[in-house]
Image 1 (cartoon, rainbow, N blue to C red):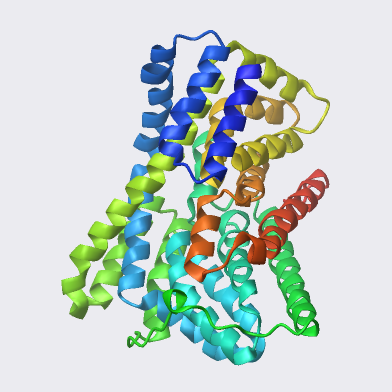
Image 2 (spheres, helix red, strand yellow; image 1 turned 180 degrees about the horizontal axis):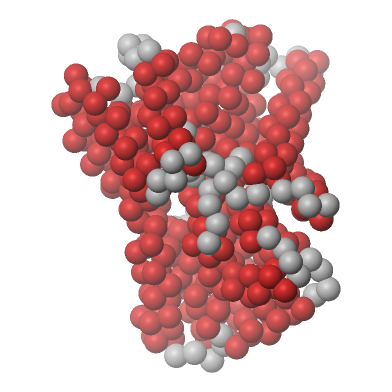
Length: 427
């Protein structure tokens, strides 16, 4: 037990300090292995790598195709077209809502979170400049649209955080739709009204829009395709996945081919975009697989059985137990998909047994796991948070408090409301 706790602490602290989880996870796993009496080399070459490879084998096609899809949306300016059109429709008076909805639409359409940040940031600067809103709120606006309700709560999302539970519970991406929709709306409206409050409060303190330094300027003068054409690949992925029951791999392939066909005049840029997307996906999946490998080692030591039995024998609802486990591990690893992967790899079967014995729908287990992954994952050491702050030129000191409210506190509150509603059969 002590080895597991120390391993998690080391993993969390080193990840927070910006050290790559690719090599930090094996070190943390070694601490767990030593504490549990396992042979150090065998724990790495057999247990750790088995969990690592199993996750990569299952999910690499999704990571790769998702990254390629997002990169093509970026390089063809389709992502910019969507965000710019929403900003134009809503206008500067609704700048905060425009940024949130732009990020949300791209995320729900299957564009990766990192691409969404690059696509929406120029729009955010333009709208915030016109509306004279302090620039420190931009990271929270983008995070609310990309890291919360469309990533993990809204049913049908093609993001990996909504797809991983399918493997463990035999569900679909539309699992527990009402619970997901209600929780997602709480995140959306709760976050939006909080940010509007913050806008007014900062104005009352005399804060105004401040121009970024030259390094963080973002001007996009490239001609963008029409909005209707730009929406087609996003709609293609969502409809094929949820209406026509395509696998996520086939849905993403169709979306990619549609982008290529609609932008055939840009064919010279296709190879570089596909190469960049494929290369970027390798880092993403290795980071997540490294976290899952750590979970495999933790699962193999005797202390984990004790911890699991304690967690599962608590006289609390399995949904609450699952929510706590996924949230804590997502927070410890700084990764929504990594934390959820660790928790479900180790505990999914036991949660299924408990759910079936207590007549709890497996769809609820799916949705609770998905929403829980988007809570404590957005702690300061989260990779997406760090990337967002770097791109926008903001510091933790200036922007993280607002980001934490919309991406950590409100999602956890929404999860609690969702679990309460599930007790009344609303899911």
